[in-house]
Figure (cartoon, rainbow, N blue to C red):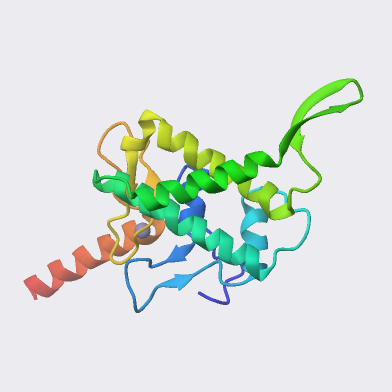
Length: 193
Ligand SMILES: [Zn+2]
């Protein structure tokens, strides 16, 4: 999979959860792989998510992105389990959010006012903002109760379950859903044989 030209999947139905899902096989220590391992990975993720990054990412950005991702994972995985929130993770998200907002300002240009960025805001801060905004929107909304964790073996991906009937069980039918089906089939054949 490492040489696959496009390992990023956007199947969560929510930007911040897609960002959290940049660890493949998160719950399987042997197969787990960080898809944001390098600045190039991070740049590609932003691009595929449709987020503009004005300048290339650096190692510091990768570390900051991964830290944020793990805090968001702690919060949303707890939501999926119906457990209580990790105060440390929530504080870290809050601190980052407030730091970003110090860099936001009202800008007058061409007779119009926009809520934009100060010149000191880094390209990374600008790029990470929509992810954080989407995370906070979800944390506040009653959709939070619809966050689920994939039942695929070792997968651990999170998604927003928008199904009206039976609850959605897998991050994607194509991957984990199919593997679960194949496994059930194998067990059935093994038992009957
Ligand atoms: Zn899955």
